[in-house]
Image (cartoon, rainbow, N blue to C red; front, top):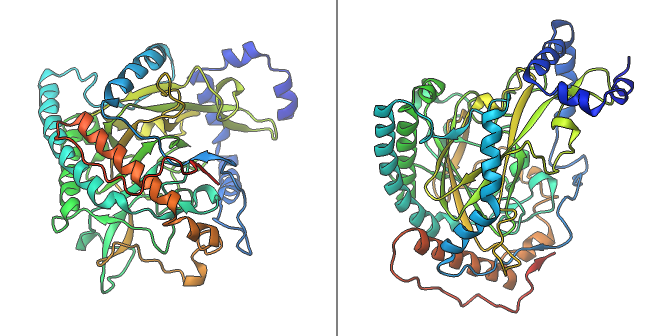
Length: 478
């Protein structure tokens, strides 16, 4: 029977009955049988290959909405209490439901806060002490980061969107700190005068979705010779030491080390859409061009106002267009639509959350993707989210890049004519950088960063440089 005909005869009740790990496992065994695996891998790997631009340099899809608010509303001093109350009023019941889902569901979620559920009192006490040491270091790192490296606003064209400054893009604002590659570990790139070899995240399979301009993007060195980089290096060391205190994460890390600190900053409409950190083939394991080491856990450290981390399940269901199976949301819920089976995790100031690879592994017929946003956290009386949140992610990466010792730009082997000029080097993109609206955007962002620091860390009164702020400027783009 063909897949489409078979699906028509399946009732909603039958879908629910089949909504179990056991059924997923049976489907997985059928889909990964030796007779079909090689043919399917070849078909789907070729299908999933994508480029920034099509032949001729034209972008494939314009996904940016017609109007987006890009000038952040000013975050008042004392917003911390407003954010806490808004979370309690709007999210506490959803959070309780999500935790109940985890407890009663047959579909296991391995990722969790590192301070939770460890049964050994001695290990819990060690984790508590190491966590305090990490907290003290992160406070220093946050202040240095916001004063220096945070200010680089590169052009971004994520998911083949037209280029805009990263502060304008819908996706969270990205900054990276990377440790240098040791002499015994160099294997992809040769030494180049004036450049240092460093580990990298988002330069392998994820390069086309992160979408930073290859000719100007920066990666900051996490070394003792750099001001903020030296603190980032210490933070990576403490993150790894914290993870290794738990035997399961120590085993998952193995001989690997955390070598990249990726940073995401959220404000206003900023978000990260559904994704996996490890790019997987449909019926086999991780793809070869992943920049993060498959199987290794990631530690997410949160600073500032609350935000949501959401896990969305994908499971094998009978395909509509062919006789096999596809990974889909449970019960046929369309991608991107609210799903009561999603697991919502609250991320609060100083939280340390572990993302575990087992949740992304397709084996067994189901897996989890995750997203992050501040939807529904608008305070009463506001029409715009005024919160400001930073996520620091310690990762173990295997991809290598060359960083310019003078300005931290990443070396690219592409010629100038190949560097996606059809997306980045446009008149519209160049016109935004430094315009009155762009200056106003950064005046607001810097103000919100400072008020967040004052709210969440004890500090003297802030001084806001308001010379570029204009309350009458147009708040939307384009």
